[in-house]
Amino acid sequence: MTVYDDMRGKFLILALGALLLSLFSAQAQPTLEVKLSATLTPEEVPLNRTAVYRVELTWRGDLARVVVDPPEPPRLANLKLVGTASANRVGAENGTMVATHFFEYTLRPQGLGMGYVETMRVSYLDKATNEKHELYAGRLSTKVVEAVPEPGETPVAVIALAALGVALAAGVGFVLWRAQRRRAARAQLAAAAPKPLEDEFYEELQATVDLHSVDTKEAFTQLSRILRAYLHRRFEIPAQGITTAEVVAAYRRLHPDATSQATQLEEVLQTSDVVKFSGASGDPSRLARAYAMTESFLRAHRPESSALSLK
Image (tube, rainbow, N blue to C red; front, side):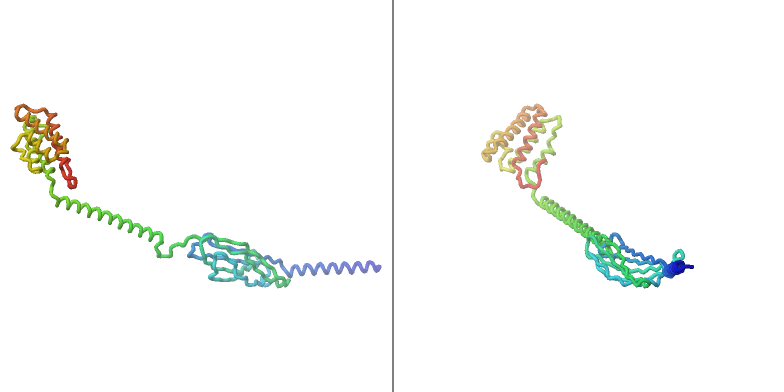
């Protein structure tokens, strides 16, 4: 055996030893798998409720190799940290040991809009290699919405709507009450006010003169009588004992500007005289015209402030 062969044999022995040592080391240090995840729930949180930010660090393999550093408080926007909690869970999955470390943060919204939890960093020590490792969870958000009623609490909108309904009902009731009071007052005033003389004679005109009567002579007689009685009571003209011309002349002296009313008075009385003294029945159309003129004459002298009106 040469020196060269001897050296080659030693080299092969050393290489085989290194390979065996590497295999032994790999078997002594099983593969370590570490993962970090985070959630922020719910996606929409009422202003008077809380959200939960949950961070989970999970590793598989030699559980004793990992030492987790307590994470720093999360960096927040439009959210406030109001509570924290942490827990550990250890178990086996498919023959591999699994450990999970939980970090839970309770967050309260500060205002309407979006709330954010910025990127979270969690570090751990691998004792087998004495190396520090860092894992990161991405930025998460939740939408802050209007507050919801507390248990047993009536919503503000319902209270406001009920108050508005009560106010409207009270307003409508007050308006109706005032309208009723006003109607009652007007009715009381109307009942207390004396009936205009014109209304009295108009009612008598309606009651005594029948426009559909076959005997128009009697109707004309009543028209003349009603007008003369009215003139006597209203203007103190002794119309029952004087001629038609004298009645009209007396009226014109009292009302020189009432040309239209004087003409109506003269036509009604003259037509009534003709029918009365001729003994013949009058024309129904002339009766209707005389009736309308009498009604117009009474209306013209009726006080405007009266509560009643001729129909």
